[in-house]
Image 1 (cartoon, one colour):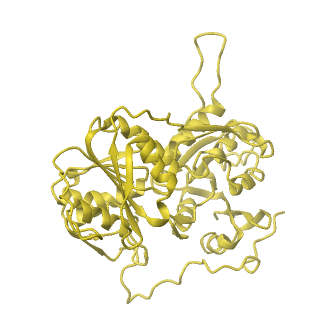
Image 2 (tube, rainbow, N blue to C red; image 1 turned 45 degrees about the vertical axis):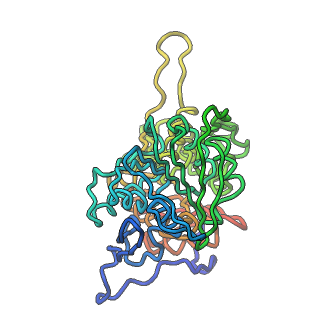
Image 3 (cartoon, rainbow, N blue to C red; image 1 turned 135 degrees about the horizontal axis):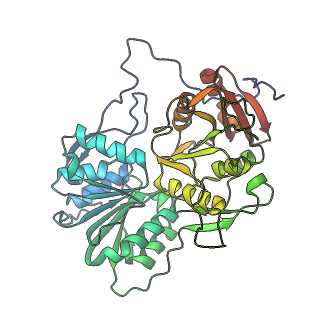
Length: 443
């Protein structure tokens, strides 16, 4: 039997704060933040809203971009011409909607291209709270077809260099010699490799002086530039020591966590996945159908492994990243497609659900037997346990009584503390010096 988790075995400083007194503001509604730019002043929040959120919905790179586009003087004292917003304006990587909200207020009708469902929801929320019509901004995902012509391309440099590479390749055909290409990032995000991508895919590139640790990137489109091929999506064979997925193919779209190799936490969980049906209806006996949710699925290896281990299981994959869900779909199909080579009846692959949303959004309460989860603990450059807490809370709601949540995480994150609060306890399935696999059962 697995030992019961002892909260003292993994000391942590990341447990959730005590509930706020009744005299405090509503903890479910975020306090507004104000961003001041040439386009106006804006009250902006992240999504989901929470009054105890300590991270702003914009940063110095966003402000630097908007000041330059609005014609404000730069660090050298010279003022650029305000950007012409009358043409096709495309904004890539707008993290919480600050850029498109400001540009729409200034009279533009920008197209936002984002990998993040949460960023899109934040954009809708920030447009509304700043009095900008929802139809002033067109929201596209990184998987959607892009505009055929771009006159002003604004890029907030993403954390993932691969995602930047892929999006530049996809947008390059729409860029023309008159296109203004302007990007920005914090100094820690703008590297020689970042500039090299702009030069290889767009054209001659230069950077600005830094302001408040943010820097602009100016790139001039070069007609006839011979570009390298877009390497995404990328596939590789999994290692041989991870159970049912050993040696199989994983498919990664650009920007997915650990797209070049299997991350160590997922690898550890794959070695200790639960086996056998877990359906409540038949007690796990013959005819049982286990409903499995790969929550925060990334490239889908956990859910795909569960599908291979239990051929009758019904799978769902959920993530807030469009790139992740596309990766999960491709990985699942690559490993579960049942080819019929004897005739024209080559059948469709095994069915599964693929959901882009906030956590368990779209999953009926009490409908899941098993949730597999390797939660992220960073929001862009900031460490945060907010996502893990929402995932655990959502998993508990999605699970039927007796359903199980299996989580892998770094030992120092102290997930056992949160699981004990939500589920009344948890068990250690496996652990080593760095990772721990935990099992919590909904009562």
